[in-house]
Every structure is written in structure tokens, then in C-alpha cells.
Amino acid sequence: MSTLLNEKQGLTDEEIVSIGSEYCSYGDKVFAHGTPKVFRDCEGVFMYDSEDTKYLDLQMWFASCNLGYKNKRIRDAVVDQIDTLPQISSTFLFDYKSLLSEKIAKANIKRFGEKGRVQFNVGGSQATEDALKLVRNYTGKQRMFSFFGAYHGRTAGAACMTAGYRYREPFGHFGDQAHFVPYPYCYRCPYGQHCDSCDHYCVKQLRREFEDNCSGLHNKATHQSECAAFFVEPVQGSGGYIVPPKGYFKELKKVLDDFGVLFVADEIQMGFYRTGKLWSIEHFDVTPDVITFGKSLTNGLNPLAGMWAKEEIINPETWPSGRSHSTFCNNPVGMRAGYEVMSTFEEEDFEKSIAEKGKYFLYGLKQLEKKHKRIGTVDGLGLALRIECVTEDGYTPDPKLCKDILLEGYKGDLMYEGKKCGIILNTGSHYNNSLTLVPAVTISYEEIDMALSLIDQLFTRLS
Image (cartoon, rainbow, N blue to C red; front, side):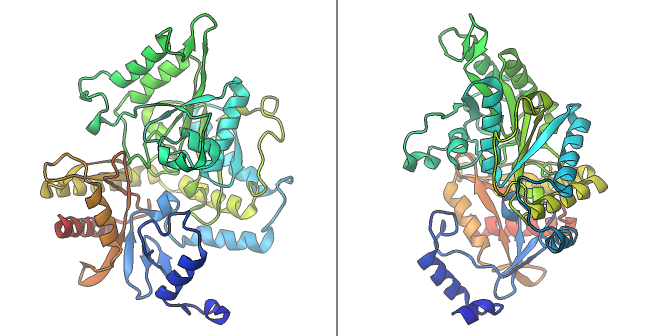
């Protein structure tokens, strides 16, 4: 067996699945849909199976590879780092940690006019944990706000901020669970309002909770709020790539400022130009107090995440040495990859190209919406796009169709330009009925055309 394992493609797909089903935990998502798909190679926006069939990837490792698979610039930098300084204790400093921190901090000075500092950790959940500690440390309070539909991670603290009970149910009581409020999901408004006439009704409801003397959110006598911060996904990710209405976050920020609650922007999935800006919150004319980031910071080549915060919150006197620490938060390979990712974004006009590609892709999806009655709505910002699957009535959520389309794409028997191919999609939303499209921001117009053709085939085949 060891000989086979050391040979390229020495094992069949069936053997790989058999070994995995026997020895791998089912606790992650690999076996979520039964027998998992096995891939052998990847490049650009494509994955390849054992028959060398190519699959257009519109998931890109949950937005971890915004610059595409096997990106040569980042790969070469990582190899160089491995050959020079691949490892170092997190108690020491080295060049690329300082340089990457500087790039992120200066990018935020340019965008928000705020000096701040950066702290790194291993993954998005850990960045959320650090941000929780940071705002607790600064405010002296421990309760938080979060949205229904939010996903901020699955570690113990982050799970308190994640709306789905299914992430907490097996593990007992979570005493620090956030105070959840409705996200501005205008297509299926939880208040039954209409976006063009509601005048930010949902924000007004939150303000009432603060102003109501019996609500418990604010003590008028001491002028203190019970909650330290509101953890916000500016574009909701696992909730279904929902884009809030114009002006929503400005109104929300006014409420938070009035009652002394910090604004934490979770950019773990939407950061690094996913929406056409370095941070998705930039679209909404709001300056956050804290930003968490991860995923595509290293383009998937090394686990690294982090947080940026305003100087007053994270300066050395307020947030001294040792308040939060991780053995691998300092890893040179991740820092070097992150430096190359940030450098790439600085040197090319991604803001323009992603806006144009996103507009082109969304227009194509709107044509499919007109063609297929099982598409309820399409929407997006930049290259964060969604398709809602619905029943024959054109509105009722259809999670089964959504899942069927996902699995059908894995079969690799769609056709494009006379060749067999497949497509990799992701699902999400409050009703598990949305296909979320997360192509690499380097996707070409020809590849967008391919995506539209394959999605059209899937809806034709299954609905």
C-alpha cells in the first residue's frame, strides 16, 4: 500500500474513497453528500478528475483561491520562502510579517483614513475568536450582536456568533450566544416589507430595541449598552450571498454609534476583491472598527487569517503582548503568500475588471432567470453571485432542486464545445435553496460564457 501511495495516481478513485471511509472522520464535510468526488489536478479555474475531465470551479475552495489555482507568482514566492526561511517561532519577527502587516494597515489608511494594526492567526474562526477577545478587552462587555443567517466560524466562541443552531446543538449550552437580528434579505423580507418603500424598517426595529426601557439592550440611566460589538458580514456568505440595500449599513452604523456598540466587518469570505473592492464594506460607505479576514489572503496555499483594528482598540497599551497567541500565527510561508496576494492586487486594476466581469456575469444570469421558471431570482456584487432555486410557482424555495443541481454538476457529463465537462458549485442561504457562485476573480469572459452554458444545461436537465 505504501508503494502505491507514493506513486502518482497509484490508487483508483474507489480505493481512495474506501480508505477514506474507513479511516477519515465523518465530522468534516467530505462525506456530506455520500460518496465524495475525487479530483487529481487543478489549474486556473478548473479541477480535473482521474479521467482528465475538467470541471469549471465556481466555488474556488469557498472563495479561498480568488487568484486561481496554481497561481505561478504566489507558488514561486512560497517555494522561495521554503528555500530560505520556511519556519520560525512565533516569538520572533521576520521581514514578511512586518511587510504584510504594513500593506494591510496602509491599505486601510487609504480606504478609511484610520491608522490601525494587524494581528494574524491560523484560520477564519480563529480570527473571529481574536476579534471577540479584542472587543471584550476594549469594552469590558461580552455580549455581541450578529445576524440571522450569519456564519462566523465553528470554534466555541465563533459558533456563538453563527446563527445556525445546528452548529451548536451537539455540544451543550453556549452561554455567550449573540443577540441575533434579521439580515436585510429584501427578496424574502422577514418583516414582510418592500425594499423601495420600507425606509429601512429593520434598522428602525433595532433602534426601538435600544430605546425601549424594558428591552435590556441599553440602560438609559448609565448610558451603557449590554452589547460590545455587532459582527457583520457586509455581504452575507453562507446565508446565500445576499447583498443589502443601499444605505442600510450607514443607518445601522448610526444606531451602533448612538449606543456605543463597535462595528466588526467579517471579510473572511468577501475580502480580497471578491466583490470588486479589497473589503466588501467599502461598497457601503461605512468605516468599521475591526475587520476580520482570511481565506484568500494566501490564495489557499497556507492557512492564515487575521484581524485589523483601529489604533485606539489595538494599540500596545490597550492590547498588550500575550492577550491572544497562536503557535502558527507567525508562519513565514503564509506571510510570504499573503504578501504576494496583496502585491498582486496593488499592481493590477481589479476594482475595474471585477466590476465589469460581475456585471457581465449577472446579466447572463438574468437571461437564464427569464428562461427558467425554477430560477426565482439572481443577484450579486462583483463576483459574489447567487441563483435562488424555486418550485413551479416561481417563489417558494426548493432546496431539493438546489442540491440536485450541485450533485449533477459533479457527474462530469455536461457538454461544452463538443467536450465532456463538469461544474463545481456551492449551496447556501436561509432556505438551502441558493446556488452561490464564487469564481476566481481572474476568470475570463470566455470562462463566464462557459459557466452560463453549463448552468443553463443543469436547469434544463433537472427542471
